[in-house]
Image (cartoon, rainbow, N blue to C red):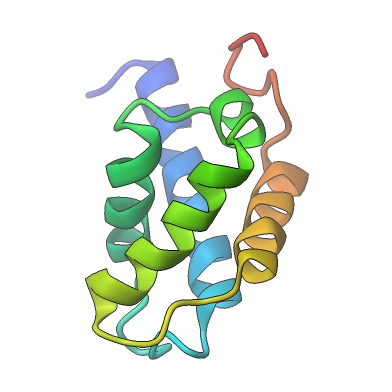
Length: 104
């Protein structure tokens, strides 16, 4: 069984993936945008150990890259930067900075 911190990180990842899936569809096909698949895209930009603090500190360039990566990963048009910002905001509403005992 995993540690409490690993369990929290898994819960955060699930919430992050769900929030992004909801926000990037359309243009990303909703049926393809599972929580795990969305996390794969996020991890490609923010790293596997992304935390709420890291998500909150993504630069404008990284947010734009993330939008493009969603389009290329799912073979669809890219979601807008505003959709990515909304996904970040929804994720942080569920898991605020510090909720994984990380620092900003």
